[in-house]
Image (cartoon, rainbow, N blue to C red):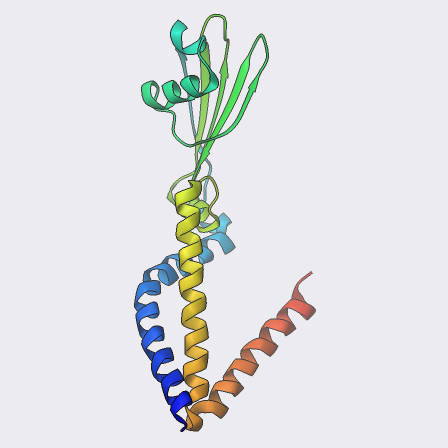
Length: 192
């Protein structure tokens, strides 16, 4: 084996081992949640719907959108990420989304009367939404990107490492080829 190949194999093995250790928790999480996403009807039941009414205080409703949203989250325990805020003279309509949760509010800006409707879809819906990054915010999307980069690195270094070992190269290429052909077959022949 040439010195360059030896170095490539050494660093690929080292990077593969440590990237694998970093990525195993992410791999476990995304494999389990991917199964849940694929079979969501098995796990996600009817949503729990909670409805309540309250009154926004005058200083809040006369403020800007940000103060309204902050008051709803701080004083009235509205959870989730603001998805929409539509205003007209007679009514404000807000929607907050979070993993496994949808909150809809209508507010009369004159009286401050607010009607809240919240749908909670349970633990399976929460992890399903986390898998997709749906309603989870920017920090969680960075987590997904980090996991994707780590797993791509593990895959690439694993391929480099296996291809760098002459006695295992043929088996590695054979198994890789079978995986690629199987994926292409399913996509081209069985996916509607």
